[in-house]
Structures are given as C-alpha cells and as structure tokens.
Image 1 (cartoon, rainbow, N blue to C red):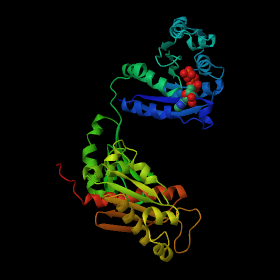
Image 2 (image 1 turned 135 degrees about the vertical axis):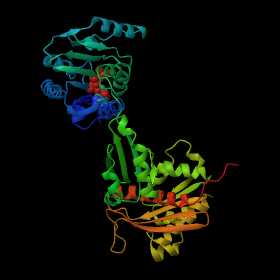
Image 3 (image 1 turned 90 degrees about the vertical axis):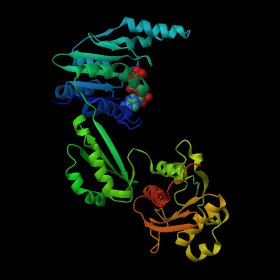
Image 4 (image 1 turned 120 degrees about the vertical axis):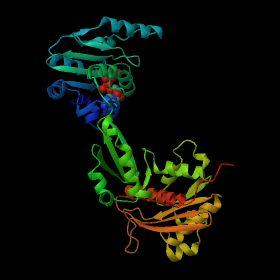
Length: 420
Ligand code: ATP
C-alpha cells in the first residue's frame, strides 16, 4: 500500500527574508513522520495572494493534501484565507459563532474585542473551523473532491502545535488508515572523517536494507542515521546497529542526539570524578557545554579562560619560562595548563586547550589550526597535538570536541566506582 503523503507550505514574508526561522516546517515534518505520514515536499512563500495560490495549487495537484501555516492573523498582510478562497472558488464568509467565542474571551478579561478580530472568523464557505484554545485564529479545513484538502494553521508555533495535537493528527489518522511511524535511530561518532567512516562500514551500509542509512557530517563529528519506513523495516534496527557498533568500537559515543559533553559529564558522575578546565582558544566553549545539562554540579568544579599569557601564569600557574621558551601554543604549556587547573580547583580531571584559531596569528611552525590539548587524570597527564582545519569558529568547535573525546576515551579505561 502507498504511504500517506502530504505537502507543507510555510507562509510569511518574514520567512523569505530570513528573519524568522521556519521551525514550524521542521516540527511538522517530525510529528508527521512519527504518525506515519510522509512529507513529500515543503515550500515557503511570501504574503502574496497569487504566489500562495500558485504554490498551493501545484502542491494539491501532486499530493491532494496540504498543510499550510502562517498568514491567518487579523492584519492586512495576512492573506492566506483570500488565496485559498480564490483557489477553491469560494466566497469568504464569517463564522459568527467563532466571533462570539472571541468576544466572550475578551469579555471575561473585562475588555471589548477589537472589531478587527472579526476577521479571525472569516473562512472560505463550507470549510470547517478547528477551535484554537491558544489563540484567536482557528485552524481551517477545506475539502473538495476534485481539488483535494487544505488545512490552514496559524503561524505562531505554540498555537500551531496545539491545533495539530488536538485536531489535525486525529483527523489525519482517520483519513489515512494503516499508517505506521517512520522511525529513525542515530549513532554519533567522533574521530573519523565522513570518508574514513564510509570506508570502514561500506559493507554494512551496502546491506542495511530495508533501512536507509544516511551520513550526517557536522563540524563536531559524523552522525549515522538509520531510517525505517515502516514497522517491518524497524525490526532490522537492532541487527544493523549492533554490527555498526561492533565495527566502530569506541568511535561511537551516543545512540541518541545527546551532546558529547553530556555523555562525558555522565561518565564523570558515574565515576564520581570532578573536572576543571583551562581554556585558551576555545574561550569557555567546553565549560559551556559541560554545564548545559541540569545536574552538572555533580562533576563540574570550574574553569579558567586563560587567554592572554599573563592569565595563563596568574590564573593557572604556567611558568614564565615555559611561555618564553616554548610559547603559549606548545606541549609544555598545555601540560602545565591541565596540571594547574586540576590542582588549583582540586579536581580529579582537567582539560586544557591552547591553540591558534586564526584567521591571523599563524606561523610556519604553528599554522592556524595548531591546537595542543591536555588531559590530566589523577596522576597522569596526556598531551596531544591536533592540526584542525576550517574557519575560526570551526577550529574552536573542533578543538572543544576533540578535548571532550580525548577525555572520554581515557575515562573508558576507568571503570565506574561501585556505589558506597
Ligand atoms: P495569528 O493568527 O495567531 O496571529 P498568523 O497565522 O497570522 O498567526 P503569522 O502572522 O504568519 O501567523 O506569524 C505569527 C508569528 O509566528 C510570527 O512571530 C512569526 O514569526 C511566527 N511564525 C510564522 N510562521 C512561522 C514558521 N513557519 N516557523 C516559526 N515561526 C513562525
């Protein structure tokens, strides 16, 4: 049987101008996939009657079921209703029932309803209104045997989401029988490029069917995403994931969307270890990420942003001689930063990062992207040289990720302590 499919249209000039991010489309795609309904296409269009009509008309000819968001407000620039009425060749009429609901809501707060709000009851004749408890614009469903079905939802994300859960998903489930969720799983990897990863798992990728396997490279590492189009395919998840895990070993750090810092934080907490940081070129990125999870106080002692040489000396205790002889971006400096941070904050573990993030400041011996990372773990301090590529932002992000991954690998060798 063919999978139920719909198209999505996001309406609003602010979306085309890039002033508002189209989070509605992302959210709707995810909810629909979970409900087993494929999104065949997505489009974005400005507040323009002809343009909305064109895009909607094309979408309906292809898919016959379209969900639109935005442009239902009471102001002049909210033109979605007009465009849809024109396309379906229906008059716009006002639902006095909805207008009374709004008048009553205003009344309860001791206010008169602004007359402009009458427009919120306006809809193409014969359409069904979906009452909106979170705002003034109801959802609108327009059905036509020849043209297809269009659902209009307001652009405000919280209202759109409420209407989807309260009305639209139940309607879709009645309309499209036998849908099973489109499920996906993720494996997050660190320390391998996309090409190296692809090479290593090429045979597994080759027979992952009925699952589809996608490589999602990001600055911080490559995610592998497996998708099952239906419940039968979903049975293959365990088999393929265990083969991937076996092949990739400790390159895999999560099988959820969890950040590497959260994984490291949990590993520290399980081992009852505390951490301190001395960050130079990353300017606190590692500290920020390690303190993102609630409960970070279980492991996080603190950190120093030791950017200038003087700060490396006074905050962390790097020796003037080290800086004079080897420079700030050096193995010796990274080692003293890690040791100093761990000692000064009385932590079990410390991370240090010192490097050249660019775009200026590189030299032949220490080009942009040269980053020394230290990890002090109880009595031992490991220091490694990384040669990272990319823009300043990417180098900083890669350095932060590399430091967390280095610590994660060292922690793997330390079993969690048994509970007292
Ligand atoms: P209402 O009738 O409740 O006023 P509306 O249908 O008129 O809603 P818009 O005027 O288009 O909606 O947008 C209202 C708000 O929702 C704006 O702040 C806008 O930035 C935001 N918004 C609109 N479309 C989207 C979208 N696709 N993703 C995220 N936010 C959106």
